[in-house]
Image (cartoon, rainbow, N blue to C red):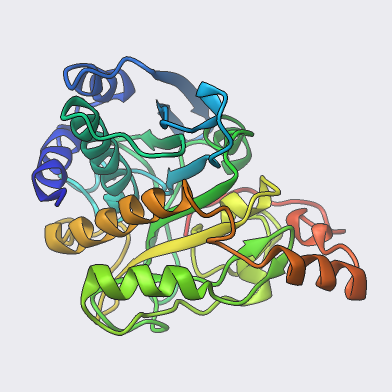
Length: 319
């Protein structure tokens, strides 16, 4: 159970001076040195993209054939200083990803190693901007998503869990977490039954699915409303992507402080870790490959939905 690691991640990321290298040092203290930080600057500020690599017993790094899972902490920023003090609700994507990294490092130290490689990436920004939005304000991103995804979405990732706080809506009205249908190359595929099973085992409840519309899987900057940025990684890769949404019964602004729920984050991190264990042994965990090929044969490519379309792109934001 990664509750200890969640609390450690919350305390670390709540520091107003935290940066990517500081997070990396905490990874090294756990005996893992395979991490790197890329500083990014944009019109609205700066952030540190951090990527942490874990080798599996039968993973690609060791010459094996077990697939590689990407766990991406998706967010605008962990803080909205100086407007808001402390961690904001939007930070949970980063908190969950870093807690997963801490837990995997601790498992390695204890002699437990997953079958497949795992790559965890997120970004650390304690002072991101906010954006007006209905029904509640969104967190903005200091750097455009294209720039961040060029660093955070690694080509080695053969499937991706995109973790994002998704409380600023009236679509899912239950506290905890929800998962999305699998999205691949512009197609919204059916929800993975195998992932639903993992979710039920982890939560002890019936699974909850976050519904997606076509516009939710298109890139930011096209002038169309998105539920938030949870599916933006799907615009930057051909790998299947499943969103993992931290949810609430009430509508909570992404820029609200005091909204982080440690037990919900722990359950979400546990789901990601259990998925990582399963994916190293089951490359079909996220979608049915034969069915996807049949869709391509019947209806052709939908990759145009991974672009900003025909109109002139607008400024990026964070949902």
